[in-house]
Length: 129
Image 1 (cartoon, rainbow, N blue to C red):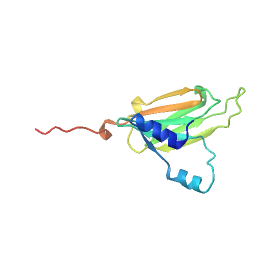
Image 2: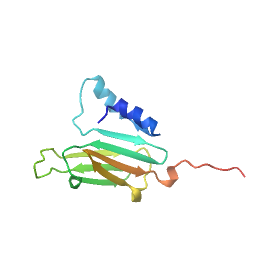
Image 3: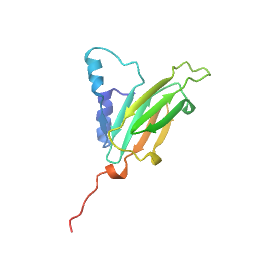
Image 4: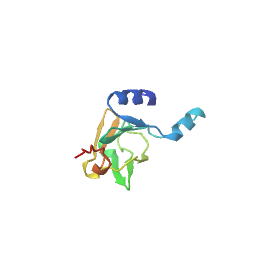
């Protein structure tokens, strides 16, 4: 997966805005690494996109849910040749999501979750009569 700055630059070209955890900078300044699955949260005008680097799994290893504005991603241990440890990530989204139209895909070790913004939170042009 690209570094955070590369993701931010790449996503800007596509009209996405990346959200960076305030703790990420603290960890970097202290020279510490977070022992978690890398996650990127991007925002466009009509949707959020969450990307997790989770190689060595299958789509059946994931359990994805929404709980009161928090995206919850759990991954179980694959009993086959997979030795990847299970993990759980919780992401507080910056706005409301249309939970009925959330979609996810898993390809080449990257889990992508597309979360359309709720209609009430999307920008709306107001015409003057």
